[in-house]
Length: 247
Length: 371
Image 1: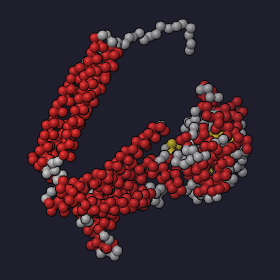
Image 2: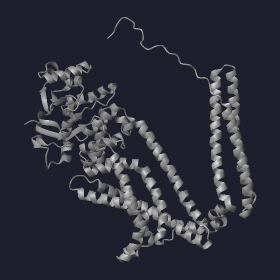
Image 3: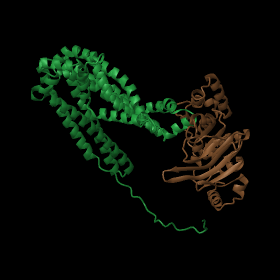
Image 4: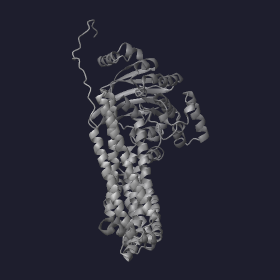
C-alpha cells in the first residue's frame, strides 16, 4: 500500500476529457514532480487530490483511506493535504500573521498563544518574521509565495501539493521559493509538485511523471526522464523545453 | 542569423516639417469681447435685482452689499482675457522675429487663458440665467418658492418634523444592512438542495425591485392595520414606513451584497477551502470582509435613495417634514416651506455623495496600483 494512490481516475470538464484512467502513486517522504504541456491536467490532478475538483471515475486513496466520492469529509481531508497555488492567493485583507493563523485558529481550534508561537517560528524559518504585521500587497511575489507555503505548513499537513508555485514570479525571485521547497524535501516532507522548472525537478525529485493524453505517459527517476526518455512524446516535449532554453 | 554585410535600410529616410504656431490674437479678442458682454449683463441684472429687493421687503445694506460684491467680482473675467491678449501679442512679436518656439509657447499660453475666460464666462452666464428666471414676471418664481418670511416662520416646524425622516432612515438603514445580507446569502446558497431557497430569494428580489417604494409603503401602511393582526396592527405609522422601506431596499442591497460577494475571485474561496475552512467559515472570514470593502460606495448610494424615499411616507399620513411642509404650504398658498424640506434633504445628502465619490476614487487608485 502506497502512501498516496491514484487509481484509474476519470475527469471531464463538459465534453473535455482531462483524465482517462490516470493512475500513479506517491510514497511517504517522496518528492514527485508532474511535468507536461499546458492543459495536460497537472493542476487539475492536484486540485482533485485536495477535493477542490470532483472526479467522475476511479478513486484516490490516502493511507489506504478513500478520499474521493460521497461521504468524504473534505474539510478534514484538507487539514492533512496542504496546497500552494501559482498565484499565492493570500487573503489581502489580513496581515501575514493573520493569514497564517486563520486556519489553525478556526479549523484546528488551536489556542491563540500557541498558534502564534508556531506561526512566528515558521515565519522565522523563511526569514519573514519582520513582515508578520505587513499586508500581502506590501510584499514581493517571492515573499508572498513563501508566506503561502507557510500558511499551508501551519496546518501540519501529511503531504504538500505545490501547483506551479514559481510560474507567476519574476525570475530573480524564483530561487528564494525553491530553496524552501528544497529544505522541505530534505526534511522528508512528502510533496507532489506540478512544475515547469525542469532543472529544479531534476535536482529534488524522487520521481518524475510526464502527463499526456489523460494518463501518466511516462514515469521514472529524474535521471531517466531527463537523460534517457523512452517515449517519443516525452522526448518531443523535452526537446521543446530545451529549445526554449529552460533546461 | 547574423551576416557580415551591412544592409542598406529598406525604409526611406524621412524628415519631419516643423508646424508654425497658430494665430491666437483673434481668439484673445473674442475672449475679451465675451468677457465684456458678460460683465455688462451682470450689471444690468444687478439693477433689476435691486428693484426686486425693495419689492420683497428685504432691502437693506446687506443685500445691496452682496449684489455689489458679486457684480464687482464679475470684473475678474477681464483678467484672463487681458492675459490672453498680451500672450497673443507676444506670440505675434516672436513669430515676426522668427522665433518659432517662443511663438508656440506664447500662443499656447494665450489659448489657455482664452479657455479660462470662456469657462468662467459661461458659468457666470448660467448663474445670471437662473437669477433672471427667479425674478421674471414680477418675481413670480421667487415669491412662490423662496418667500423668505414664510421660510423663516415655518422653519422650526418643518425642521422638527424632519427628525421623523431621520429616525425612519436611520432605523431602516440598520435593518436593511442585516436583511440585505440575509437575502444575499440565501440567494447564493450552493448546491442542488439549496435551489428552493435560492428561488424564493430571487423571487423576493424581483418583486421588491419592481415594486415602486411608494406602493409598498401604501400597502404596508394601510394594509397591515386593516388585517387586525395582534401587535402588528398597533405599530406606529413610522414603523410601517420602516418595514416597507426595509422590504424594498433590502432587495436592492441584497443585490449589492451579491455582486460584492461574486466579485471576490474564486481563487480566494479555493485558498480558504483548501485550508480546511467550511463554506460558512470561508464566507465569514474571507469573502464577506473583502466584499464589504468593495460595496460601501454602491451601498451608500442606495442609502441616499432610501433617505430621499422617506419623503414618501406622507402617503400613509405620517407627519414627516414633507407632510408638515405641505400643510404649511396649503395654509399660505405658497410653496416656500417645501423649499425648506428640499434644502434639508439636499444638505444631508451632499456630504454623503462627496464621501462616496472619495471612496470610489480611492478604490480606483487601489485597483490601478494593483494592476
